[in-house]
Picture: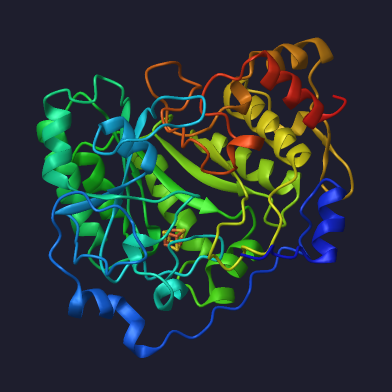
Length: 410
Ligand code: SF4
């Protein structure tokens, strides 16, 4: 395979230390032939599934549907013991990330996402990469069986149901949740919601059925970037206002510390833009779960550069201060371009925070380790292991030294 050329402009802006707005433009989605739409290949010719299915683009994907089948991250499949494998510097994940699955796949078209609809012609849904990894499919009964008998050895601190944009995902999420709560009540559940198809009553139902934390993947830090990457700009159905409507519903129904929002850093927003959203979510009582932008293979943004490490580390540290140190954005200083130039914290204290390393771990819903440590550690979901963006473990001394170099002078 030949090397992909990085556009000259992209290269220049990456060297400058930030991914600037003008450069971070998705490709236009290509039309999908009718014969490949809505999972037609799988629905007409897909074989019956038989247990674990490992994504394999050389065979026709079996006809699998939630709630009978769910997909899970490769890390979760290894931790659950349904797949063999090893990960770089970590032996397991603490969160069982489940993804609803249908032959039709997700009907949205988010530009940075490997699951997006525009890939229908190229790859069946269950074979698509998502946050850099494959997602094997497993019968849900088997997952429940293993978990109910403690087959994970207590390694999972949390389960998360990732809804996708599909007409059946609201109903099937309820079924998956109810069955989990009945069989595995000792492991709390988070919902990664799909606001586009949801109402306030749906949020209430999931709370009443036993979900502990509700999250909204806002992903974009401004309305313009949202519309460009997951709204009209890419023929996708999502809207900024609807996402915020459901986020406000989650704040009211689930309450403080029980809701959160995903944000991706490096899609053309400034550091002030993203930390402004972090503060808004904190003011509501929730937390932000940060992802470093990485050009997902096959996505409409796979030609663009990953977020430069200096930009990413500054935002990680700023977010940690706001979310877990009660240090508001009004105490930070930004330059004209919105770059964070002063955290507003004495140097000694800032150094202690960097040395502790927690700010640079993967962020998400908490597990049993500490209130500021995420169960959802998503090993290498936003970077390759050779250049870790979100550490799925406590960073060691050599990691901290690297982080300090990436941060530059504080
Ligand atoms: S709604 Fe979620 S799963 Fe679907 S394309 Fe957008 S980011 Fe991907």
